[in-house]
Amino acid sequence: MVTMAERPPHDRPVRLGFVGTGHIARGAHLPALAELAREGAVELAACYDLDRSAAEGAAETFSIRMVYDDYRTMIEHEPLDGLYLCIPPTVHTDVEFLAAERGIALFCEKHQSLYINQVVAYERAIRAAGIISQVGFNFRYYPSADVVRDLLRGSTVCQVVVNLLSRSPYTRYWTARYELCGGTIVENTIHTIDLLRYWLGDIASVSAVYAWGHRGETPDAPNLPEAYAVTYRFASGVPASINLSRSLTESSVGRREVLLVSDGALIEWSPGRVVMDGQTFWEEASAGGGYGSHAAQDRAFVEALRTGGATPTKSPYSDGVNTLAAVLGANISAERDGERVRMDDVVAGKVTWTPYEPVLG
Ligand SMILES: NC(=O)c1ccc[n+]([C@@H]2O[C@H](COP(=O)([O-])OP(=O)(O)OC[C@H]3O[C@@H](n4cnc5c(N)ncnc54)[C@H](O)[C@@H]3O)[C@@H](O)[C@H]2O)c1
Image 1: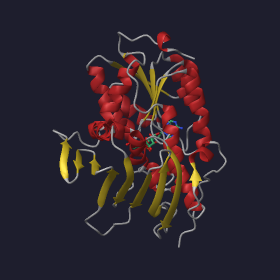
Image 2: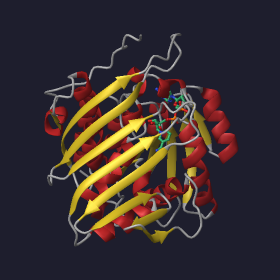
Image 3: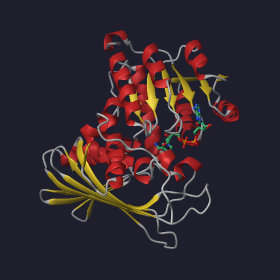
């Protein structure tokens, strides 16, 4: 186990490696880290992707020093301080264990894996090794997340209502397949659910009902639930209802609401604005854009490495286990016709989600 004392602050750029250089690596992390490299805080040392052309493209665009054909060789040969793991959730194997064994800090994109038993084993190894870790729950890095957190100090939340009614396009093949991404609640709404946890603590149980659509006449077409009605109970007793759908295909309107009913006030959160009792309480001065929070979490990860962990990350790997259990638990409940599922039982493997190909039509 690495202790704080054995992780001295670095007075040189921290050396980073990447496993997976797809959409999120190239669209969010690498641009932010390249900026930090220009500031002298980071060295983009090495990368690997199963698709070598993706790694080469990233290396060329972001001046990553070495492209590897094999992540094990990369981890063995490069004296890395930190490793970004940005691969689809069904293909995780031993990178987490290798990082833990070698004392390399790990930034793991959400969702940590689609299989909770893997994540429980990774978490144990990461915790035992004492490495710095972070899961890519970037919503915690919106300044508005801390505005609400501060507002809630000293008040009691009695109910949460989340409505996410939209039509968002599926940008990658695996995000359109239930068995590959876990559905929209797992792949996407996990961010909002994690944010609720940032404010309200752990989730104790879930009950969910889904409606399946009839799209998908070819093997490649989306096969996801279209509507989700999910009820969480936090360990504190607070209930939260999440209504989610992506079926407004012909409509120009949608709704994205995160509402907190506290003792005496209605708080409405969105990334750039916090509204209290109908009045703007806080508004972001300059729009940071969707990826502003990604850049902030990359800075935080690098800062944690540079200070030897003295400035902790907001979403360490251990903390993310409850968030993952909450979304996988919703799938388990939906497949059991809304039966209430306890997070402890999901984490212990007493109830499991087995991705399957649903029969459409
Ligand atoms: N935090 C966010 O807002 C956010 C946004 C998008 C994606 N993500 C997450 O980031 C992760 C990656 O998603 P993405 O959008 O970049 O996907 P992607 O499909 O665009 O890229 C994944 C990359 O991983 C590579 N890859 C696949 N299997 C691999 C393996 N075994 N070893 C090494 N490389 C492998 C692929 O070739 C591809 O280049 C997912 O977990 C996803 O949920 C997070």
